[in-house]
Image (tube, rainbow, N blue to C red; front, top):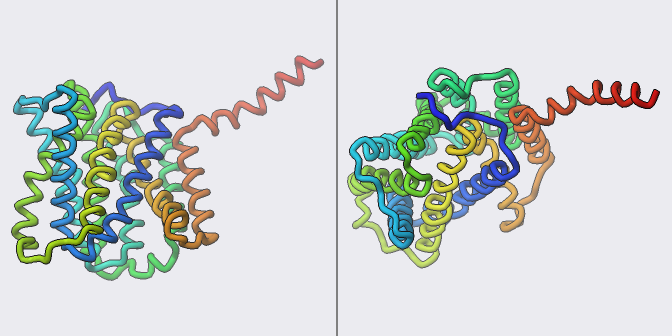
Length: 319
């Protein structure tokens, strides 16, 4: 699975896109919190990807673009939809019926840990480094600290549910590496995002019809439809365009760092818009996540290593 989309040090633009993606996905918790009061999980997920697919299909048509018709591209779209939507969404939905959301968030934050190993084994240009592994471990610990020790209280019970969420994290890591093939196929990020959510909707709609029988439910109110549009247009359609753009420019390993940033964005959004109180553990967790990201990026550590030599050279010049 080698590709030219190799891992590299991200610039300000790439970091900006990664932070924006974390905000879009972190904001999805607000929308889901509204929708889940009126609709069952699979119906929400199916509507999420279907509305996103409809919006992106209208957009590419307005831009005069069209989805590729090649068989191998559509097989890749369905593979991506399976690994990035159907499998992880289903596992997380089932897992969260048995374990607390905080513990699920910590387990989901193992995505970059799996990603470092998967990218090392399946790519030629995203090999594991000491800085990368250290940074991922620090970032994961930061997520655990920020969510709090109470979330870990259920660790060890409901093992199958915990394994389900870990399976979702592993599926996300596979999806990030799998998606590298779209650049080799010459499929632009916008078309890749459109194809993936279109394929996902074709798989998830039948699942929702079978599992939830949505025609038996009460018709949702305007607030629920507003939340569904928010999660579909902002947290899915726009988010996946950014997702595939970051993947194309920065590689799979860097892309998976968004998993650390999503809890940060969700907590900060809650503080700004819902008046939720920030606690010392949140600041400590964010500091650890920032340290982990800095270690993975490598530039700050490199600069710190070169400071003694620069100071020595400066002293010699003064003499």
